[in-house]
Image (cartoon, rainbow, N blue to C red):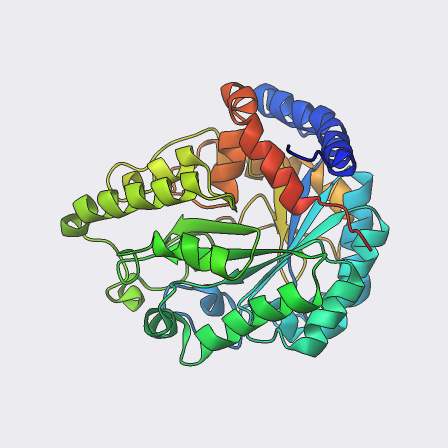
Length: 377
């Protein structure tokens, strides 16, 4: 007989209740074209610096010397958290670059957010996940960590991210599972023309590592990568001749995820990956309504495809969120024609469609268990 964990069920129901009204406000405000009262999630980039030079990533191009101001300090990151609390946020995503290059800011920001009842998700390439950093992450109270792994085959991953990075990432996953069992662990993979064959094998590989989630995103030339010269992608971009085979591989991936107990990308998201390179799917985007991004210099934007015009160094995030300047950026989102099918904006927006709220309740239930699982410590 299935043993029901009433504590877990109660926790998930509390999160649904906590977020339900806020998301209703977000949906209504997008429809009415006015600033939402709430901001459910904040993405905070604490640095664009990175220890790797991944072939599909354009973040390092964002580190061009166009702004010589310093990166956000710990106190400024805490100010973002305080504003997020005022706006009713329940999730803080911390990313980079490589966020673990700023341990002085990272661990205390996580702790501060947790003390403020905001769940924290960390994105990392995994190279710096040694025993000391894993212990510090667990002690800080981080809820979830996602590690980038591009293939179950070492040579393919290393060709994309750098020699030795596969072993470091896998070891980081193992250390998290062994030393920080309360932390939910995920794997993130970017589907490119160099690793898409056999991508379904990532599901079994993720299961073998004992993680809780595995997610997939097609390679992009916009968002954080929009300043990367197209020619720099080399042979990573799909050509017309690849798309029939990509269709087949994505179907195999969808079948593998459907048979797995891992939390993963939604069936709808996976089914439209190939369309990104044929006739990009369109959808009502909730960037700037359900989420915003804060860059390492404090500029605030709806998503990484837009440049922010206001900084948290000049006014609090809650004032920026309700300002006419930020509302003008929301108007740009509404008219955005950028080819976008990523695990943040696209997945989030798919879930917020009225017909999906009920239809995808099972997927949402699983996601709540991943991002908002209560600590047993």
